[in-house]
Amino acid sequence: MIIVIILRWLCGYFEFSVNGRFPERFLNLASRNGVNLWNMTGEKESIKAKAKIVDAGLISTFARKTGTELTVIREYGLPHLCAKYKERAGLLAGLILGSLLCAYLSGFVWSIRINAPEGINEYEIRSELRELGLYEGIRFDRSDISELEMQLKIKDKRISWLSINEFGTALSVEISPKEEAEKNSDKDKNAVSNLKSTADGTITKIKVRKGKATVQIGDGVRKGQLLVSGIVEYTDGSSLLTDCDGEIYAKTSSSIIFELPKNAEILQTDENYIFKREINILGIQLPLSVCGNPDGSYVRTTHNYKLTFGGNDIPVGIKEEVWQKYDKVSADIKKEEAEKILKNRRKLYELFLVGNSEKQILERSENLTETDDSYVLTVNYEIEENICEKSYIEIKDQSADISNSGT
Amino acid sequence: MKGNKKKNGRPVNSFVEKLSSVRINICGNREVVFEGSKGVVEYNENSIKINSGKYLVAFAGRGLHIKCMNEYDLIIEGFITSIEYIM
Image (cartoon, rainbow over all chains, first blue to last red; front, side, top):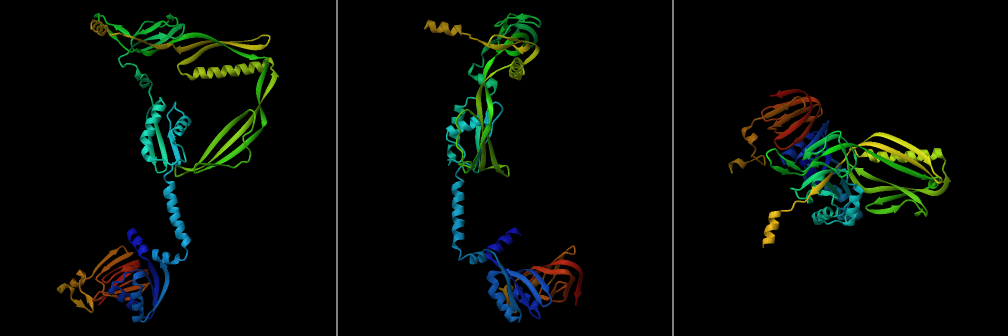
């Protein structure tokens, strides 16, 4: 039915009414002469119907023959539109220009979506792509995609696999990171390794997947001591060389000193800040604020807002920048303030320390002392951590050496 | 050709006309497909009468209209309340 409607619209049709004593005669005459009529509505001595524009002449003849009065109510379809806008050449020019503009602009890249995995920053990938000549607003040759993929893979060693997919004028970059094992793939797959200790401590937990543990729970170990051996000896006298794998946790002690001068230069925020806004249309950045970049020490915070339509990015966005001024102020710090600052530093340090899930703080003791020109916070930690470090064993093929020396 | 002999100035090539039979398909009381029409005798929104040659078929109802028609076939739509054969 849709096709019929489209065909009728393309050919053009009109709605008319015939009025007279016997409009049925008109219907019969029209149908017997192959004139297709549709959407007929009848009232007393009047019938409304639709017919193709090409049948207009016949319909007029039949109306005259049957003594009915023909009234054209409305015309529809492409021929009617063309006739209506024949005098307005600007519309046609606009249509052609619009089509050309669409065709031209569709050769550009208007949005790049990067699906970066954990550990790889989207901003870094975007910068690397920019260096390789791919960014939003550039005219892009589709045939360069495979070369770009290869270049980016060579440039960023963290990438194991990547694919740049096209969705019209949008590109989607899918990245797969190198696994830890893959990173070590440069090493020989048949490599032999030991696990050695990275710190002094007392063993609390042993998890060995490959290799033979040389220590037990409760043993004290020193830094660099062998924990898991890659040479496994069996009772029948045979031995196996393996690449060790496992974790050995130990209770270790460490201390750290945080120092803060009594008279320090601190950065203090100013209440004044500069707010700048830019609009990005089709890769062109237009400033919406009249102020330039300020002098002095500032911290710039940037927010990018992109318009989306149906889940796709549109090449129109707004960038907002806040420039917050910082002044260096020389100030005498009181002991209470110093304690607060130093404890905050300690908390920050612990956050990074424990951020590594293989470490756990068991005990902590801290002591704040005062010297002539500074405050010193000494913190002693008891930590449970994985102290394993892989140490590869180089094995020389003696038989090869002998044969080489023989020749 | 025999099949294309002219009758009243028009070709006789319809399968339905050759058999001179009428076929009426009624879908509920909303739509009627009428095959074998020889002309519309009466047409308004409450009544449509179709000439089938040997008899008239009268459809009565509300909001009746002919959706489309050609020489022998037509489709009637509307709220049909009765169908009557007038000999």
